[in-house]
Each structure stands twice: as C-alpha cells, then as structure tokens.
Image (spheres, rainbow, N blue to C red):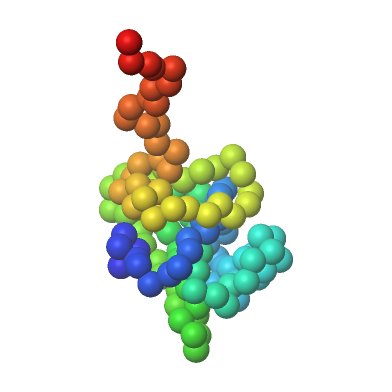
Length: 118
C-alpha cells in the first residue's frame, strides 16, 4: 500500500530518523510543531526509524488518521539522514524511495547548450 500510495496530494518525508515508539498523536505533533505543517490535509507524512528497514506513514483521511507501517524483510530504504526537516517529494522521487533508491537521482543525459547550425 505504501509503495503505490496515490491518495495524497503531497508527500513530505521526515528527513533523519524518528523514534518509532511514537504513535499517531506523537507523529502528528512532529508535523505540527517541528515541521510547521498541517497534518489535517490530504498529505502523506512518511517517517523512518534508525535501522532504515521500517516506515510509518501518517495520513489524514478526513474523519481520522491512518497509521501505515511497513517493515522490509531484506534491505533498507535510502532515507535522507542529514536533515531534521520535512522534504516535499515529487511523485517520481516517492516511487524511487519506495523502491530502495535515493531520491536525488542524477540525470541520464546532460543538457546540451551552445549549439548552432552552420
């Protein structure tokens, strides 16, 4: 469900690691107090634990919160660790992250500039 989550208008990941003892109220307070975002919007907020093999997703469904939890059996997520902020992802970056790739992919082709026809 988290791999192809398409119900949200936006996705903000919590960079760094999150204490996974927190539940819905604790994660919602991180969104409000630390990130200064509104958890009561059509936004998915994924959080990652220290081991990088588990994700919790917080999503407001209009009448209550959904807490999604996923544990990988093998491997780890390439979760951004250097920041302690929320980072908005494009749909493509979110797909990369869920497939175990880094969200900052280098481009396949460099842009060509300075060409002219002779």
